[in-house]
Length: 192
Image 1: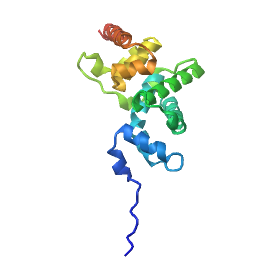
Image 2 (image 1 turned 45 degrees about the vertical axis):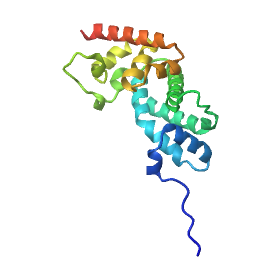
Image 3 (image 1 turned 180 degrees about the horizontal axis):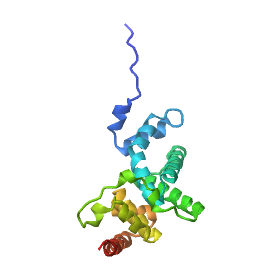
Image 4 (image 1 turned 90 degrees about the horizontal axis):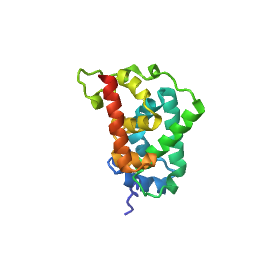
């Protein structure tokens, strides 16, 4: 009696339960003909990347464009990903590079009022890290230098670890921690 051959491809739900490392391995085998694992991997990070890039670029439209470019680069470059860092770090490094390219092309930053008002989560507390989502703090963040702004956005908005940020911006770990603390001090001064 012949049994039907079971579908060897995992479902989207099964893939969603896998780690980044497992999804990368599957996607590398599947791409470019089958994109399911790649799609699951990108969906996992898409919203966070858009939020992060929006804060970094001060423009939802630019952020969406950058994230689209990041997704294309991942699609075409996943086979060359060596795994020397985590997938998340590699992804954010691509996003950082694309954001820098966008800023260089633009040369003049948009006003912070371009950031979506829905992201406003005003709090009564004086905790800078909790208030970082508020529009008032967005204006203060915009006054930071580009490197400090990058570190604050990646730490407070993207919730990346210090080591991940260091890998993304090519800085040593202690320098990232020091710059983050100094940036927070500047923000606290503005806040008070």
